[in-house]
Each structure stands twice: as structure tokens, then as C-alpha cells.
Image (cartoon, rainbow, N blue to C red; front, side, top):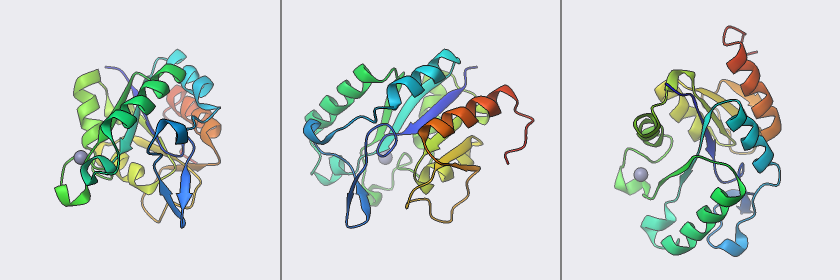
Length: 181
Ligand SMILES: [Zn+2]
């Protein structure tokens, strides 16, 4: 089985937009700015043999303020610039009570079947608490990038930025017996 790295889209792969201290998703290609560090960091993960998958909650699709066409344009650009294997998204609102809206782990379990992944050995990189919760639910290891959105939820490691997350992940993968400290 292969090992996956799941990366939160907003704030990690593309720059976060912040409105009134909340992080919001860009709604059009013009506002979608890829993190300049992302292509090389994802390439490093690919070279190490990981399946690299972006995950994202996009409730604007269900609520009607995110157009599917604009989202497809943003994701086509993301796949072109960053060597990801896949982008998995939850289009639902919390009132839909779906199994895929993070912190629920539905996107991770979907990827397990689609990509034949060993989730126990897989990793999640995010700047938000809900990805650490999803990781915990399936036995994956979470690396959280310091941000205002970490909350007090469970996490395995907190790192300073995306590059530090990739460095630490490669160390852990090479030596799983190492402590998480
Ligand atoms: Zn969903």
C-alpha cells in the first residue's frame, strides 16, 4: 500500500484570505494565489514516493456563493502549478450532515480506496484544527502549521511553516520510531 500526504488547500497550497479574523476561500481565479513555496515542496514529497492529495471544505458550493466553474478553474491551475495527485473536496454545508466535511474523515477514507493508501502511515498537513481531528479519526499523523486557527484540538506536531512541515514529515517517515517531540 502507498502512503499519502493530505494537504489542506486554503492557507497552505494557496494563500489564505482573511476577513474579520476568519479565513475565507478565494471564490475566483483572480483571487486564487498559489503559495510560491508549494510546487517545490510537493515535488519533494512526490520524489519521496508519497501520493499527495489536496483536501478542502467548500461549503460555498452548497450555499450557492461559489460557482462550480470558478472552482474548477482554480483547481485546474493548482494541478498545473503543483504536482498533486488529486484534489478532494467537500461541497456541503454543515446542515447537510455529510460524512466528508472536515473534521469528519470522509475525504481521507475516500482517498484510501481510490489510491490504495495506508492511512495509519499517512500524514496530514494543515493550518487548521479540523484537519488534525480528521487525521486522528483514521490514525494518520498530523502536522499543523502555526496559525490563528489551531484551536485546542488534538494534534501531533506544530511547526512554523509548510517547509518545516515537509522536513519533519520526511524525518518521521524515514524513522517512524522517533518520538514526535
Ligand atoms: Zn461533504
